Amino acid sequence: MRPDFAVLILTNNRPDRIYTLETLKKSGYTGKVYLVIDNEDESAGEYRRRYGSAVVEFDKAAVAEYTDDGDNFGRRGVLYARNACFEIARRVGVKYFMELDDDYTSFFLRFDSSLSYGNTPALRSSLDDILEAMIAFFDKAPVATLAMSQGGDHIGGISNGKSGPRMRRKAMNAFLCSVDRPFKFIGRMNDDVNTYVTLGRRGDLFLTVLQIQLVQMQTQTNAGGLTELYLDFGTYVKSFYSVMYAPSCVQIGVMGDPRGGRYRIHHKIDWPRTAPCILREEHKRAALP
Image (cartoon, rainbow, N blue to C red; front, side):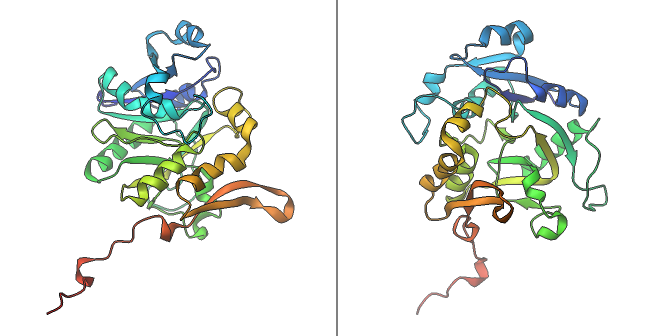
């Protein structure tokens, strides 16, 4: 893997449960990896005992000074670690980095070499090549970040009208970034949605690559990290952060099947009112005489 790239795994109070580390290895990743913790983590000593120099610590209070968390609930959440990563990348001497959570269990391709849609086996040797390809695209496109897809992006398969060998204008969970294109995540909960909606409305590009998908543990089943925050406040409050930041295009909705009793509160985005619709120059109104 290229030397100017690193994976930054954001973790908190889970020194014994960083599943992403093993997943990266079994997927064929050979590059640099750092574990990002804050200086308020009570497990910091255990992280260092287990992982040594791979652990990188940041000053949470200092990052909070320039972070819009959207509330006055203290300094809980992953938001500050996300914003600290740009400076951490400079500190460890890389230009490109990918922010990952600590609970991924696999990566796999949703399209084969002929771009036919379907399930393929979990990656065993090609993650380096995939990341190199993502960086090559990132270099040529005016994007703030590139993300990998998640399971929800593929519900309904190729017939859902959203899945296919193209991009979606969103970015969640895994973020390929560059120190040369910094931006700030906002909002304590639902920070990824808050950010791509708010900055996306201003013209910044946040894109998801649908060809590669990550798989993570079920929400709120892994203690530590954001689990306690979600359990304390619930998914309504989590989703409402995005409504608060972008009330003109985000509302509260549900995900799942309400008729069968299997659903949960979730944000609902009105995309025509979110992403700027830019007309071709040929449609410009002619100047009046």
